[in-house]
Length: 134
Image 1 (cartoon, rainbow, N blue to C red):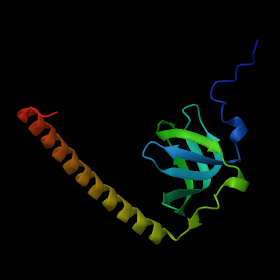
Image 2 (spheres, rainbow, N blue to C red):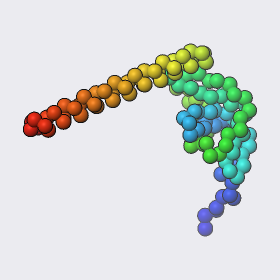
Image 3 (cartoon, one colour):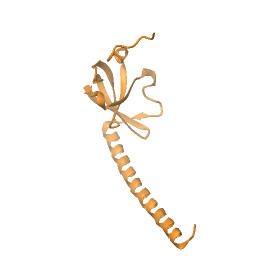
Image 4 (cartoon, rainbow, N blue to C red):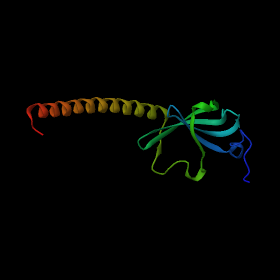
């Protein structure tokens, strides 16, 4: 019979290792796992929020963090040799926040343009159906 882990012990082997947590709201938190409980609430030490925009990233220091287990979507250990891909460049927090703001504005504009294009295509299809052209 295969050994069944003790309930709530799944993270034991990850203690004192650097982890990446992806949260429900999309944020990515990196830190050293110091403690956890049966609800998967997690305590991270030396935590940072890593923000990405295009080929840029920034680490925003958070310090000691308690993360509720219900907010964790994914977690995994980070390989220190591969933590930061060579294709990314580190920028200051202010620069990444500005880039994120512009990216959101661009996406909002793009969504509005797509909606207008979809509407135009719908009107064209209705006109074709009305005139009997297919």
